[in-house]
Image (cartoon, rainbow, N blue to C red; front, top):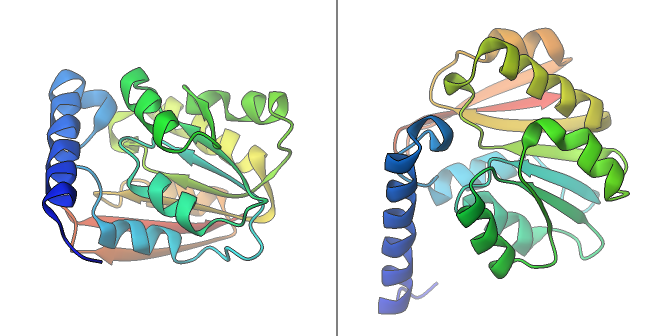
Length: 193
């Protein structure tokens, strides 16, 4: 991919926008910079895109994963994007209008039902679980599990291994990898229902 002044200015604008959102709501955004392309690639690598027909993204932010999902998903794949920040959600809706957009990840089950999506093949999460109360973490994991098909996959990243026990207690198999080329470096959890 050729790097142009337009790409650089767009990338810088995206990072500044994300930083502004972090300063505005640090307990909602969870990081000072968007996820790197290295983290996005690692997060979405375990998914078999030829068979995925339904996916949800939780905590989309400025769309580091949304962009990738949009570019690789099958034309018949339905995608639901959850982002609490209204301005971020509106920007994503403008860039990727064919996806469905919702505000609160805790309403995942209800929103899938109202959108007639059925159960999901995969859920990808950028939610900052470390900033949530234990009860909220557990409720989100419960709605994710309820929303996944049998053998569905939940992929999440975190900056620590704080979620390891909760995920291992709720999924049949959990694989953890480390992505050093992200600011800050991150752990990726691939969880199988």
